[in-house]
Length: 144
Image 1 (tube, one colour):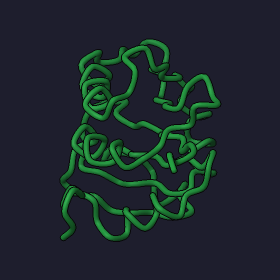
Image 2 (cartoon, rainbow, N blue to C red):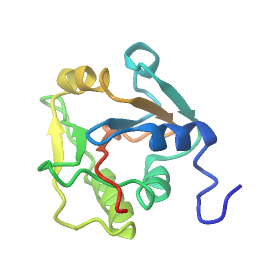
Image 3 (cartoon, rainbow, N blue to C red):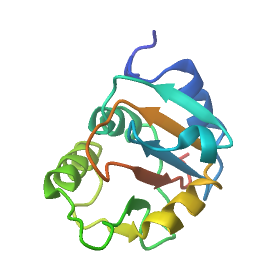
């Protein structure tokens, strides 16, 4: 273990976060996501919720400040509804890491989201069970 780094972050996940470049994306996927089918790199974080992972990752992870939305989530399928608590919990984790409360979260149509996830640097399969709980983070430049 390391001081100041959450034990929720496995060595494999820390390695991926470190190796990602500016503009690369990582998907924190819910337990239902077809990560094995769509991902070029799959990292397991079974049993860990996305809110907890966001709380652990965001203090270490510079977000891309050159885009309108450094976060993306799946939009609800027509006729379905989003649970507003999911985004509220994610925003609370973002705020804990110092993200602006007005940070835009892009909503992406389901199949477009699947397509986008194919180009993510990694997909992290979590234990999250919330419907539409997936979130993509776009990496920015580290403060040096």
